[in-house]
Length: 189
Length: 295
Image (cartoon, rainbow over all chains, first blue to last red; front, side, top):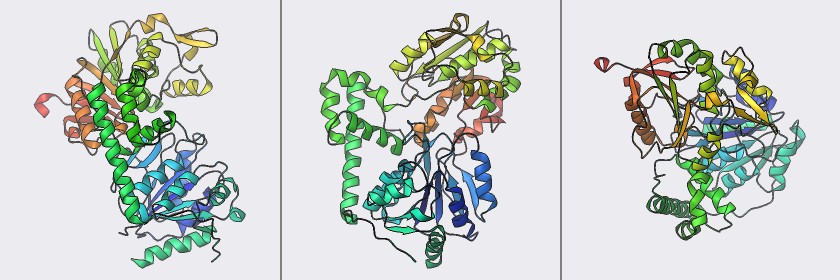
């Protein structure tokens, strides 16, 4: 298993890029992937199913203190914030919403930065809020790689644009370019 | 590959980062020690990531520069001491949260409770009361409220004060009604509340069956002997070891064959307590204490 960890945050308009990215990964993809997607109500399960059906990796909705295993994609459950608790496990909370959202991308990214530091690869996709910018800045600050979906390729560009305007992006890429980069990390190890 | 270079922000080298994080962790440990010594609450078993977030929020709210600057505030300001713990705990609740669980309680657990002449139910971590109110409604509909006492406890004195009034913190809405129906409710939720000035208050005859008390799951003893213990979305704030201590307390509180209900996203998989409990309904998160001869 790779030392690197992938953290993805998406909101409005992010399902298409998420599908593009995840469907390109092989079933032995050796970086653990963690996902926060803002959901609007009760469609969460079907969204997870949509992700799972387009992807060779196992998709799991995180339970509290869940232990991260290889070849798996972990998704934040709707209504809960998701944190990286330590190098092995996650934790959940019902703390107040951030940027009108629970789960919030900032909380996952910030906790990941503090645990995995330069081994973080964070990806911020299409969305209509400013969630994710603070988290990306923390990841960048701790030496991790921050990737933002290019505003031109984003269905809703507010979230990526906010990250870029605040200097939180190391790379600005299209979903296809993000896939290629993630595969490079897989082939490295 | 198109790479747009973003504005440069200063990046500290790894040495500095590790040192900064190390310092911050020392500050958190010192604050936790100060809280324990000054207020008597031991937060050392709390899950680190979320307590850290709340402590940092306190740094912003108190307008100080660092976590360690909270320590003199805590030690010398009576005003700060009064609600310090309350501000570090989370109190989100709603009526009939996780309806799958309430439906299963209605169908699988209430018939068992019926076999007792008197019933005690412990709601540990009741927040603003919605869970206890939902339980009272469930029992009322099953005709079991009469000889039942619901013991609702929380660490947070502010929310207990609120919960005691029976007044909902938010007016009843469509989502509440939807969850009530998904819980197997066939009446109208508003039947159980009186309305005045756009506030909804639980009917007095239901509220009379709930007592609200201060209790700290991590430091206090078993609150009562109960046929049913419900503790949902509280243990997510604890580390694994502390979760086990809490589960042991609940197990000790249960009569033989009594039931334990935990939160939708909580799990017994990592706990040795799983051997002492029988799974009744995993998606509903309902478990039963095994009789001692089976242990």
